[in-house]
Image (cartoon, rainbow, N blue to C red; front, side):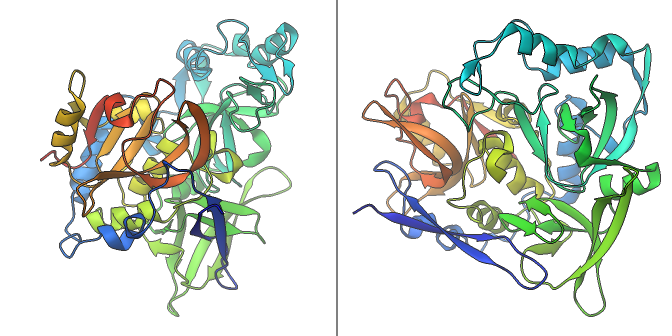
Length: 435
């Protein structure tokens, strides 16, 4: 009889919380279960000391902005150079526009005709010498695509989970800058806080700059501290760390400012009063060890979602969401998160040397391997270094295992070559000052 793991997902608001229990089969190598797979195991009496001040977090964010890893939307220029925009649109394709890729559109190989049509839809030739950015706000959870199409392109004909065109997702109420429109009018090319890409124009509502800034940089807001927060009556779905403008009322309830789109395509803001029932916190949480641990375990066993597909998170958005809930902004993708950290390189070191280095690594440090990032928890009572991460797959006895969930694990799970994860690490990344 298989083992089962139980996680909790907060998905409702308004009439009270709705808790769903997810039953997930566990493989032999993953996940670690028992006390070590609970937040309570890792919290400490001294774990409420801030790891970074607000000023240090702001300095960290500014360094990422200066390096081009994040975008300062609230202070971004309204006028753009057309040549630069054309380059950004090409870069956003992440190489899929350099030649017909060997991918599948559904069960059939991607054709030259389809590929040409999608590239032409970018309408790059119509971009003038100067471009004016327009303010807009998302009215629902929205995909950010590498190219202007909602058709999925996959490496395998029977794949439905790993769409090569899926970049990331935006929460409802996220401020974006519209820089360009697709030829068919269905998609808008946008700049977000951490990405460039194509968004379904029907998921956006245009607005004036003053209203837009109330979403881009609200003075008062709430943070989603549940794995997900779904308001079904409003058709809204937020993920961990999302920011919702609003204020606390005198009766203790929360008054949220929620985005809608009117018949003319303009933003219509609705105020909604909800009880304080545990899914939201005022402002950002302090960046402490204990908050980090609690947030990291909140989505335990929830489904993996490549680029935010399937209403899920992938490895880098999982890490990003944990830290943004505490006011620390990280880039979206794992390779850029690595660039945003102070690094301890591990190239050339043996497994024994790597494990010895981990003895001094604080919880919350990021462990990077090619294409994957993990959050370090520390050593358990038996001395094992453990991590928590949103993992798609691993190998067991030479066979690929799709686990597709947030789990606690050791660093002994293997890649296709049979190499343990500890030996595939590129670097340890520090958010707070390294020890």
